[in-house]
Structure formats: C-alpha cells, structure tokens
Image 1 (cartoon, rainbow, N blue to C red):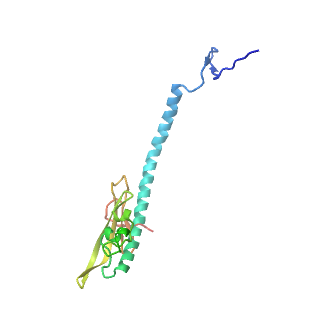
Image 2: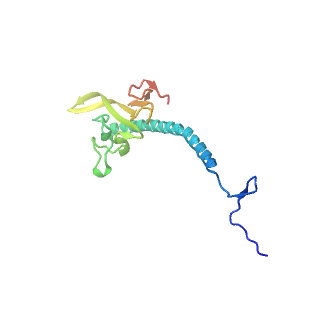
Image 3: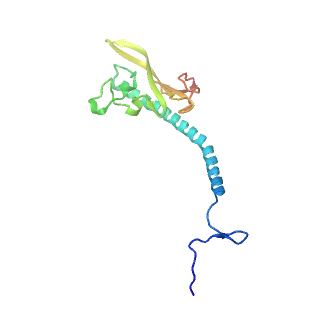
Length: 179
C-alpha cells in the first residue's frame, strides 16, 4: 500500500477543484491599504510629539544656560554675566578656562543650535569699572529654527530665572511659563 501525500494542500472551491493556499492579490491590496491608512493617521501624532520634545528640550536648555550664567558670574565677578554662548562654552582640551572660554556649557548648546531651536544671549545693564565692562543682566532667547515644524513657541529667560514664552514662536516673550 503506497500512498503519496502532497507537499502543499490546497482548498477546494465550489466545483471541487483544488486551489493553492495563500492570499489573493485583492486580499493583499486590502491589507496594504489598511496599513497605509493607519500610518497616515499616526504621522501627525509623531510630528506633534517631536515638536513637544523640542520645546521641552528648549526649556531645559534655557535652565541649563541660566545655571551656567550663575556659575560664570561667580567665577568671573569682574565681568558679570557672559554675553555669548561661546564664552560659556569652550573646549576642555584647549587649556585652562578663561572669561572668553569658561568651559561651563557643553558644546552642543554653546554652538547656539540644539533640538530644532536657536539660542542667543543678549547682555544688558553694562557698567565699566577700571576699564572692564561688567554686565549685570542678560536675556536668553530660544526660538524654533522653523516655526510650526521644529517648535511652535519661543522661550526667553533672564538672570532672575524666570522663563516666559512667545506663542507665535518669536522672541516677544510675554506669557509666563507657569513653572
């Protein structure tokens, strides 16, 4: 009694003919269409999550710059606050820290660009003592590189540690962050 078993069993249609197993082209197209629809629904959510993450990073970066300014002012009291991010930054391998390269801030932030935001410092309230300029106040600004894409709001901070935001994405920070 010799019996042979087929390697691939098929299904039988209404007339009893055997058809191979698998998906039809129509079934595959329907599955692909459903996957595409689900992906299209998820893409806007991913974009808004990225903007929210960039904004959170910008707020944290403003706080880091504030702390670096406090450390700079206590290290170089005759200069007051630093007027540039490069003065707060600097390469630790380039020698000892100085007032123009304090090596307090990491290089990613001292480059003025981080997580879709552009950072700047503007000094105010300059006093000249013994031919040395001392700055008694400053403003930190963080604005999105592309408003609506990398972030929606601009952020500002000052020597008091107050962070405000501009809902239009600029540097006209009038609304309190409510920390």
